[in-house]
Length: 85
Image 1 (cartoon, one colour):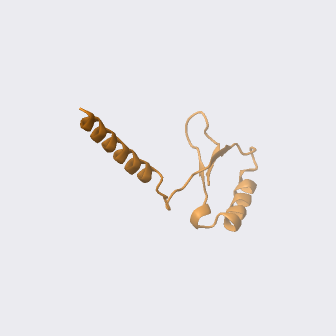
Image 2 (image 1 turned 90 degrees about the vertical axis):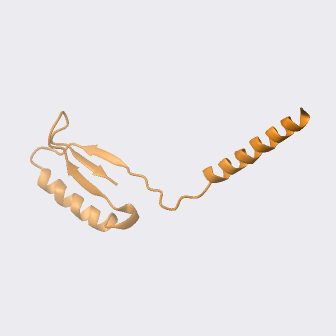
């Protein structure tokens, strides 16, 4: 009876260590997206579009910190812009 308990403990410990090692593995391709919603002032959309274009070219051109802007066309937030970084 004792040997069954010992083997059970050994199995539980073995599997626990393996799962913990897998869970702690470093992931190099991790990415996070930040989403911001903004409502442009009516009549100033063109100026905002140009300002965002200059900013994105300078800070978010490509790679890890790339960004893009989408205009919401339908629904309750129609006319708002969504920025994804």
